[in-house]
Image 1 (cartoon, rainbow, N blue to C red):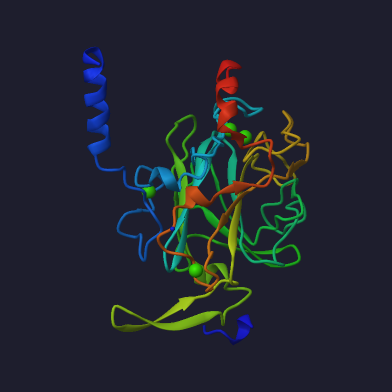
Image 2 (cartoon, protein in one colour; image 1 turned 90 degrees about the vertical axis):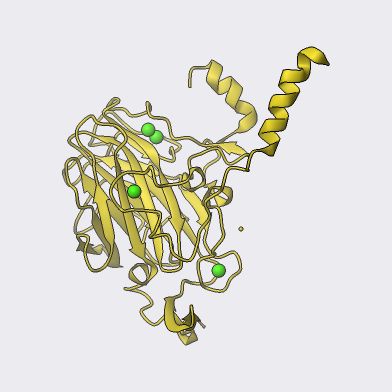
Length: 309
Ligand SMILES: [Ca+2]
Ligand SMILES: [Ca+2]
Ligand SMILES: [Ca+2]
Ligand SMILES: [Ca+2]
């Protein structure tokens, strides 16, 4: 079917007054997916332009899922702190954060059902001893190393073959990681057309936008995006000290120990099943995780705080 488509009391008075003031304040705006986010999100390797509800590791009201900044086996200067996601009509926007002194960061992205790779250990580039559980088969990943300004986009072609591209015509990306500095990120705008490029070049829909004929790329109806972030050493055949969201078996001190990343964020893109990523959606309100170890429920948060987390 897809191939045929072209194609959201007195002593209490001050307190009462304060509450009233709070109630009368404008509700904090929730950034939602919109027709075109290029006016807000600048691909510069910094995330101050992102909204809290695009931080899928934030508190979404039902669960607390913050990726810790102190859970790496290699210490504070090699630690992931999570990723952000949003989208518009034409592109997926991602930002992945942490500190990766002398090492690498990879953000794995799975959108296309029945496609993708289950294991990085035999890939023809960016070969890492990192595998995934059923239900997660990345179609592409964004990758960078400490000090590199231009992340690579790796798209799965077939078998262990990847298409490896620097930013340019196909996509925009910038990374700002530099030794022990915090507040840095790998940030990218990846057009939907480039995500489906090797699988469904004909999945487009002719439409009219602002009175002008236009063409939009289609995804398989009902698509979700699944994501996981890994920190790895720079050499082929290595593993790494931290993953996000956290996996069941954890990571090792030693780069030679394989990692099974059985956890990932799941964010529905197309709840109305029209093949187009939904506009007016809050990514944070949609996120769930594959493994129940994390996120923990809010009711557990007090216990976690007293235990020092
Ligand atoms: Ca930015
Ligand atoms: Ca971490
Ligand atoms: Ca982690
Ligand atoms: Ca839709």
